[in-house]
Length: 514
Image 1 (tube, helix red, strand yellow):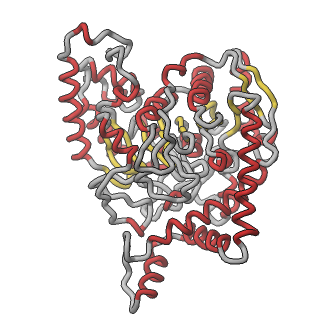
Image 2 (image 1 turned 30 degrees about the vertical axis):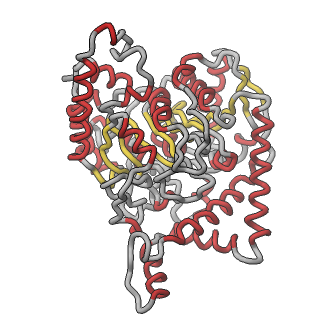
Image 3 (image 1 turned 45 degrees about the vertical axis):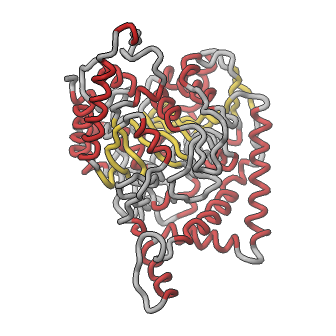
């Protein structure tokens, strides 16, 4: 058996090689992660639900499949660096790999809370398509991880079911809304995780926690079984320790799904085979619109340092403009709450989740929503209801949709000149818990560099590019044209290879809890 302490920080490819060669079993791998959860999670608070028995059963099934693979004739198993079949694609590498699921994705037989009292006892009868595709590839789900209630927030402080802390500094937030997903991977409590990204909810926590987070093109990953926040913006995406791991998971979950009417009717982008091609010859865009007032100096220097290294690797840096970027924040905070107010109307105490009895149906409806929803969710429902109300629809919602089109056209014009854009992920490193709770506008500004990507339906990836003087991770964002996942992951891999930050681990995760 391999060293248990090293197993929880290994990559998918490293673990797949150990599993295939019989140097570790899937059950030993699951048990190592369950022990890490037991040791670290009381400090970090990433998990809401741990499904140890289910995970060990899945690991046992994976071990049976691995035994059969090892017994195949040698001629059918041409060697590869990982010891896997040379013909094996990315998804096959996930057999027996432990992962964590954001609690916004439905999981058959496992409660799915969405971080809310409204769904605290909800147990779905089916699994989301992304979860089912991982199940089919033999990945081992360890449990469900914390999030801002109904994915509304930038710090995971809005969860009604507990607080998640940043493994790099327990006094700071992990980002949101996929804070549990990012913290679990950073702390060695899962090899990878799934999150959802409506305005940066995968990329922001990935940057704050020093892991890789991919927001795919809208429509490339099925939203079936994803509890809706804002339907035209939501997208499921992976968080992982390396760019290659994120690419492996993306290939496993992407692809057309007839159960989702917004799923793109096209095959998934093959990203793994282009990952090692480097950036030589690529045209990478830098926009001054992303480097203006409010950007922390250390974040700016870390991102520009990565840009200079990419230039030395052979990329050509080109200045481009996104003229309507300044309107992305107000446009997002009209469209997203409007869609949320419509989607969350279904939680009425009759059809889903919590039911608080009243003297009549109106009182039951009112009491259920008053007690079931938290302050941030109520704030966004009120904002959205106002924007959609008679007399204000054209002044706010319709105008916001028109500006959204202008932002999308800005990106189309930029991608006519460059292959990808380089930007910061967030204006600062992770902030202290409670620092922005009383000021919603300051909280909303943390997503200022990410939410335009959702408005335009584009892919974006957050990759670590350095550390602040306080030892906190700094993320860099690569944005591509629609279905440009191969380009952005190729650039992110080059950033990862040249930044020198890969392999760094939070002290709390290696036994030096503060």
